[in-house]
Length: 230
Ligand SMILES: [Mn+2]
Image (tube, rainbow, N blue to C red; front, side, top):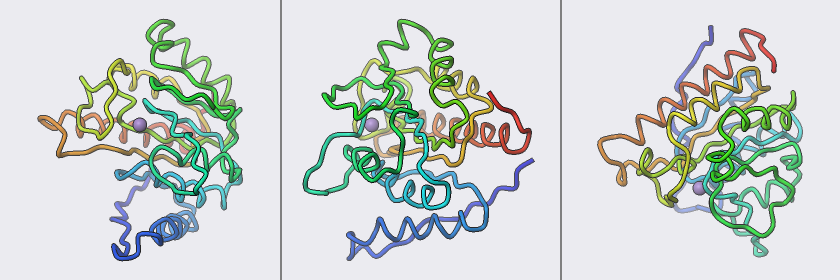
């Protein structure tokens, strides 16, 4: 059994947007320092960067299990952080080990994968979920892994409520099958992002997001309460 608390929102000063990443990192560190795992919900995917910084401060460099239509590793020489560049920065800062990390459901192009293991949506549709799960297990092994899930990994037919939808994605059933196939992974933190209720229809996307978040908690419990490993 897990004890779970809703810790509320992370507040910040809208007049000082440049301070937001540091405030979020400090907020996450406060929770991690109590030896509590954090499931973060909502917002722009770039927030993974300060959240990762907090986790790496505690755990050291981590593997990333990243569900998305986009790699979010586009280079940004100017040091600007946004929801397409944060994993470029995460690699350059040494927060994640790309060779021990996996990106799932990608269906946009990026000439520089930065060493990440990428499983495009096309590959998954061709080879199937079971083969994907085997590959993910072989790459993640027992490495400490941070799980970050952009809802746009899922096809807009199942998750229309998001800002940058791309057709040809995974179904909601495939996503749940993948997560349930990864019981035993060494999960240290979780983040579900880019759900945008104004773009949603009949709460389809929100329902899926809630289901995925629930499965994240079950995945964490399997490892940390039941002691399961791959
Ligand atoms: Mn995305």
